[in-house]
Image (cartoon, rainbow, N blue to C red; front, side, top):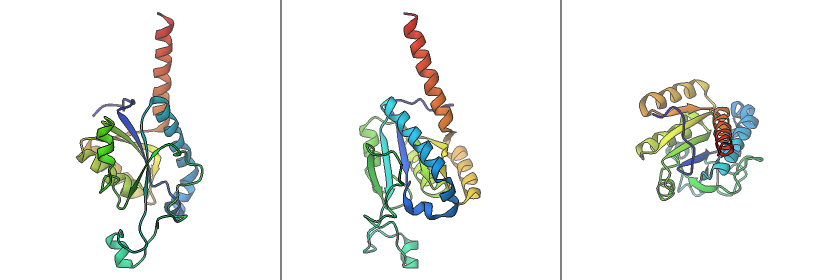
Length: 204
């Protein structure tokens, strides 16, 4: 595994499930502001580097045709198409991102994400959003299965269950060799890169 992601057009940013419904949970609600801020910082960095950005949202049909087994067992649906629950959080900067609608935890499950990544020459992804022990973990595991390297941005992901989050991140690191990075470290690395490029141009 590389020590740090080498950010370029061959790296994509995946923003996962930053939707109103998930932040009805009180734990995630308290983390909403910093998560939005860090996701927006990542989006700005991605734009500056020419990286593709994917806004990945979960939606379900009201007729139960897309419901999960647990939703069917409980006869309780949510994240209905067009609902306020399914909308992105206010202030999230994804206006020009490619939108992917998913029906299950993984962003790869029966979507065209894999095809889009291959077509764009993407070899690695930065993963941000919620929730760490479910949709983030499933997407990261499927990225590994799809031969795409994944880095989890620690301060841009969160879970309603911190214990599950900790054990899940350890598993992804140990079994799938996926790295954990922070928004600050990515921004600092980009600053260093630009300073080096500027210095190099000044010595010519």
